[in-house]
Length: 196
Image (cartoon, rainbow, N blue to C red; front, side, top):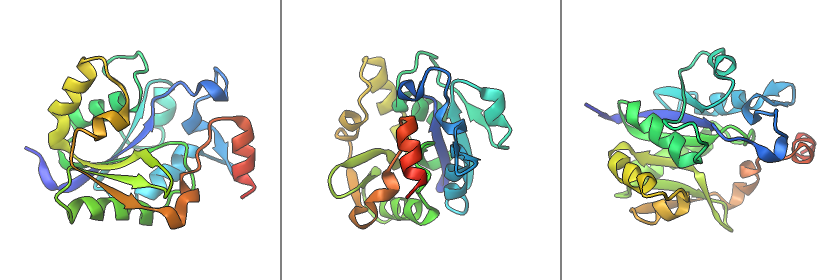
């Protein structure tokens, strides 16, 4: 039975990172001499009760960070919702906190805002908004949405913002901290972000 008061954190590292080059795995790329996934792990500290990494490659390398690694049910790289579903299917908490592995500027305080927005509203999902657009892979959501997500993906759909619109969502305003959502998709972006 789910413990409704507890939170599982998931760091999404399951993509192919096509723009980084075929051999690159974004969570393992060094940012200021540390693998990017370590920044996400640090941000989750004190915010969640347990944390897992969703990864579909380099499983043994990710396991070295000392947390469980869960792969997508279908290793066809279906996008972030597939990773969220895999973790939601196994977690035993009432809330799932989601963030990607490639946004090293995110801090614990930002995730706390998402969690508090979900817990203090009647919404099913809290999602970050940077003042211009949604940041749909920064989420806190109720795990009772498991069946809804299963149906959505089994119907061949993948777009996370489309699934979000099917539910009660509270948007969390991060317009004063929009830069924390800068993520790294190319080697050039990595260099630029390191210089900030």
